[in-house]
Image (tube, rainbow, N blue to C red; front, side, top):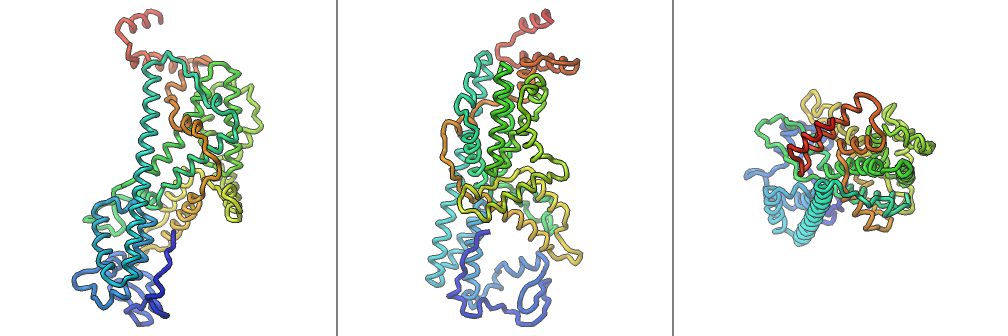
Length: 446
């Protein structure tokens, strides 16, 4: 997590002086050793930290202020989305006003902190607006295709760029941009239980205030379906083979870059049933490179091969001399899964009722590593045409993919034939120009 330099000039050589001076003490659920707090119940920690009318003597303000400013600065830098809540922002303003009434040093620090928070919230808001516009454009293009399905989609990714390395670079741009807006608080919100940590039913559950994590998961799904669409929309077998081999090369370049999320999304798209059933097409594909990629992302042994590759990329990132070598984009779904099972597999509280700090330290280490990866600036030049196409081009639904797949290579067994008839009938029913006469004609032909 970001570390803000403490106000050491205000603390003196001995630092912050704890009011507890005993070697070992235990008061109101807090345990101290050598003037250091080593454990305690959550209720006692909150009671100790939250000021009240009786507990916030002016004589302690000078000792508390530098620590409080440092805490608030780190909080607003690391968890800015917390302050989209009006109640949180109101409380922050009240506290900073009190701190600003003290020394000039505190007043300057508070102003800088507040300005930084407003900048971060503005940037996050602009990003959310940009996502909405992108999604709206993609929806409009998809609607246009549905309204006029007889119009052939002439544009495809290969017609825009036939260089796999360039496409892999642009996918990495999207990955790093979307990773960059995911805050650590979203991992907490993703796994928060209905019952809060202190089991107090009067506590209000924290409601999610951001959807950047979900947007990133949706991006993975979109890329998978885009790959499947590009393959299935190709009418001729020769073109389908070319598209498959192109995406294999793109996936390989993603692996070399360290972009494991796009790599897995591409493999997932090629493994979708409407694509994998195209046996005549796959028989013409040069499989050597694809087999290597599938081996690297093999899920057996808890993704052992992928985890080994991830460790190698992480080590390269640590010793890197350029942003190009620093890129590590993990397979995000597996990262979420690891954090989920760590959260579920360890208790929040010890048997004595104290908070299990070891568990939260392990969670923090995983999230902190992710926070390091997401800060890397993409070193590649942007190509607006590729980015626009990848983010907004219409993608087929699973049913549409099956229909396109059956058009390319007809149903091979009774189950596929039944599915094909059902899907074709459903599509006719859903067409805006459908009429009862159309249904009678279709039934007559059948």
